[in-house]
Every structure is written in C-alpha cells, then in structure tokens.
Image 1 (spheres, rainbow, N blue to C red):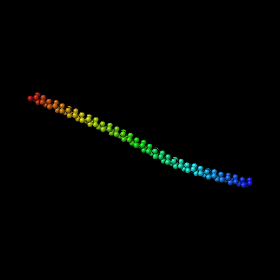
Image 2 (image 1 turned 120 degrees about the vertical axis):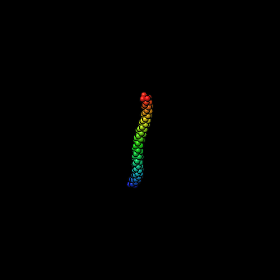
Image 3 (image 1 turned 60 degrees about the vertical axis):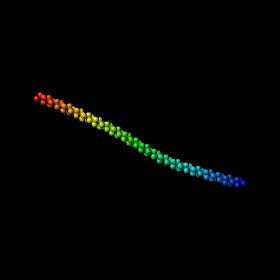
Image 4 (image 1 turned 180 degrees about the vertical axis):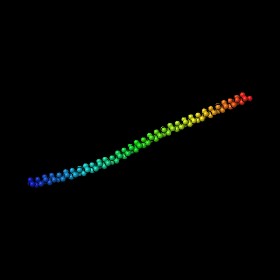
Length: 120
C-alpha cells in the first residue's frame, strides 16, 4: 500500500505541478501582453509628445512672426506720421513763401509808385 500511496501522492504532486506550471505560463503570458500594451502606450505617448513639441515650435514661430509683423506695422505707422508731418511742413512753408512773395510784390509796387511819384 505504501507504493500505491506514494504513487498516488506523486501523481497528485505532478498534477499540482502541472497546474502551477499552467498558472505560471498563463501569468507570464498576461505579463507579456501587459508589457506589450505598456510599450504600445509608450510609443503612442512619444508620438503625442512629438506632436505637441512640434505644435509648440509652430506656435512660437507664429508668435515671433506676429511680433515681427506688429513691429513692422508700428514702423510703417511712424513713417506715415513722419511723411504727413513733412507734407504739412512743406505746405506751411509753401504758404509762408507765397505770403512773403505777395508782400514783396506789394512793397515793390509801392516803391515803384513812390519812384514814379518822385519822378513826376
């Protein structure tokens, strides 16, 4: 009987070992799948991170471009103001010249009249 008991116990141990081995393989398979899932998530995360980095770079470029355009607009507005001031100054100077010319003509005419009056 002790041989039957030993064989029965040995059979039970082998069945339990096979069950443990099967559980171990199943757990290892789940760990492998989980590891692959994690790797896939890491890859997706890296892709998203690169897209965000790219978007941030584009945003910075657009921001710089907008700032440059604003500076250009400010410069153009200043140049326009300078041209307008120059035109106003030119118009005033032209007006002053015409007024001075008219005054000189009047003085000349007055002097001519005086000369003519003295000659007569």
